[in-house]
Length: 380
Ligand SMILES: Cc1ncc(COP(=O)(O)O)c(C=O)c1O
Image 1 (cartoon, rainbow, N blue to C red):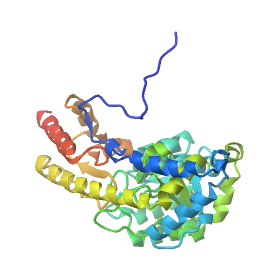
Image 2 (cartoon, rainbow, N blue to C red):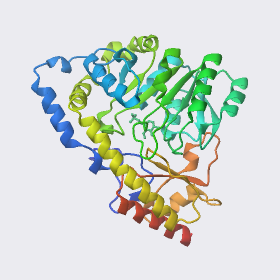
Image 3 (spheres, helix red, strand yellow):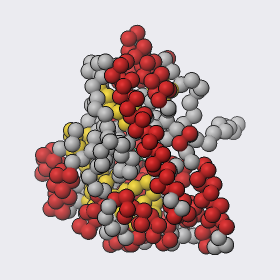
Image 4 (cartoon, rainbow, N blue to C red):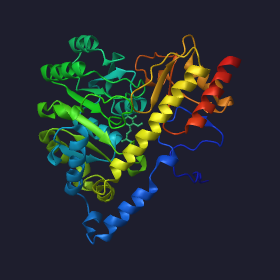
């Protein structure tokens, strides 16, 4: 007997009238089909069929050039195309770095809490994960120093800006200290900067790309949150020596560089100025959602402890005395979802925290979801 699969395009397919406030993907209304249609038409009208060829290992040079110009303006310092390597998203970038730089059993450091699906990638590679505590200003440097006395990590994985799930941003002072520790102890920093360009109320410290001369830092960027995750397109920003090392592996020798066709289309979109337009639109929408979600939480979940992030997607909420895993189960009956803190913990902790996202639903749906959650908690 053959098993038939569901006819499904998107990764998550929820029943109608379920509001999953845990999901961290952009709402369909924010995915710019029109901009991509124009960009694809523009690119396909050039009669350059090289975009259908196996691509250059480190990524299409014209695309890297357009991306470098875009990032130089956005970051406020000069980014060279020679320091960029095209990936099919941060997830693929992390996986490639783990493949090439680690072996099973190696120790790596992560934040507590950290992005749960990155933790899964590290588990796929059999890595020994040690977590470092964080506070409102990000990774606690004293804890990092303590961990470095006990282990020699291959890398430290951090989400420095508008962190997933906490929404916190690593302070400038701590960034400098961490980079100095990386140089002293010889480990690499993998800075996942997926939310860096989505700032609403405060400009974050400059991208970790500013530190790449030290050869101890890789900044990972993505189009998933600033354009569309289905494009599977991102980049590594690193020292050319490291890029050279990444570019000569079996995966790229056999398959060529990642996503040459999509890169060529997105190049048109960047050059037309449409990426800037799209980011401005997202910032407008998301900042309104941040404000209204804050209001809804304060109105309906009075016991909730949280701080409103200055950018990104996530509210990291604590309800003292509540087991968020049990709450998630019970909340199903009320047709509302969340992500329990335990998922993001490498210490089996954070059980009274949960993550809510502003990315998928509009302000009314978010408020509706929070009211359902309140009902669920009240009737528990
Ligand atoms: C911190 C973080 N890193 C990486 C990703 C995935 O990025 P990509 O789609 O580029 O693989 C996400 C998506 O939710 C994320 O929150």
